[in-house]
Image (tube, rainbow, N blue to C red; front, side):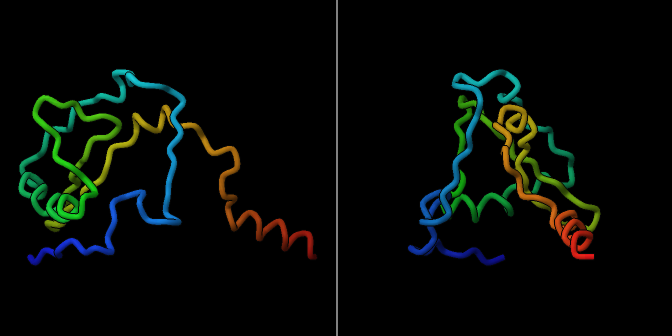
Length: 122
């Protein structure tokens, strides 16, 4: 497996102009215990997978190492392994989703809009 070297063009999350993001929480620090959940215990299959999934984002500065005495806030990384030997790293955002302000104007479903337009045209 070859690893890519960090390029000067690659910036950390939120530093790219036009790609800013803002997560609005309806709570303030200190976060409630629900957001401070412990990591899942790993099954034997994905135990070797963290090295694969962590090295590149760590080199690019997207993620950082957490000290042994530092609690993880907001999300916990989860390695999902399939039977074919492949795996993927995802974040468990279920606790964060309970405290995130909902978008008052979500993107509408395209199929519903097309159906309404086609009914009005006929």
